[in-house]
Image 1 (cartoon, rainbow, N blue to C red):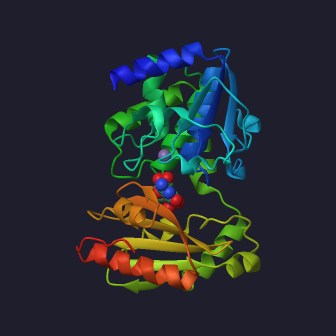
Image 2: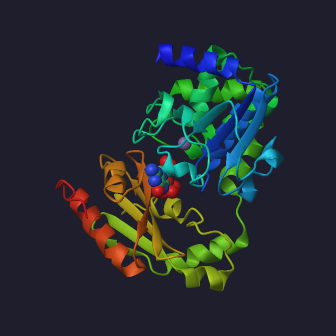
Length: 321
Ligand code: 5GP
Ligand code: MN
């Protein structure tokens, strides 16, 4: 990894303009890593474009620099992807920038699509990697950068609750606080607060909660969104409610999408590797948390996903659908 870091540093030093991208349906680590790296590079005098194809989710508007995020970028000397496991996850238009020069990510499913790949599946968040890489890459972490990176750390660990959290990660969070990052605000904005619509939308899914042994699942429909006024196309974090249930060895949420697609989220407790399951369906993620966007009707995708999920629980090797 050392040679990659040195190469990355040289590429950054040589670039006057840098475009940074993160993934579609951005979460706190996508936004925090994008902004943290972007602000650190901007304060070095680089001309920085920060790009989220789906735009900034409103809950992250409190983050410094978030006003500057755009949905596309022009040409740049250096193209960087953060927190993206595949090139497709960038959501770039076909005529967008060709190659990704620098790929910084912590997903075990990363396809190594960069010219330089900095991948650490043991990191709890891409933001954690960026904090560790700041020194070696010649970047300064000021209060604004620290706030963004702490947001990535707090959200990807669901408030330091995931099993990959170590004393080292907590020390990192403490260091980010010492640099001025406001933990309670980051926690509240990043994880806790949500609009009333979201709770009503959860209610639709919870009313249809199903269970079969250790498998617990729920679906959300386009009609649920219309009825409750929930503006997003996501599950409003319902998966984190369901995966907390005692019975849920494996939790699944299926969300009907426009154009005949279904977004599926998996969470496991214990030994089940749901990233494998997600990859069977063209998605990806981490062992305990993964997702996929699957073509088909809600009924059709539900039955295929449940069949594969049962196979995983029963210990049989999954088959590609
Ligand atoms: P979620 O279920 O919250 O959408 O995602 C859980 C994890 O799986 C995240 O780490 C996310 O990056 C990954 N993930 C979710 N959807 C997809 C997808 O469509 N493709 C890939 N490669 N990863 C996904
Ligand atoms: Mn992440």
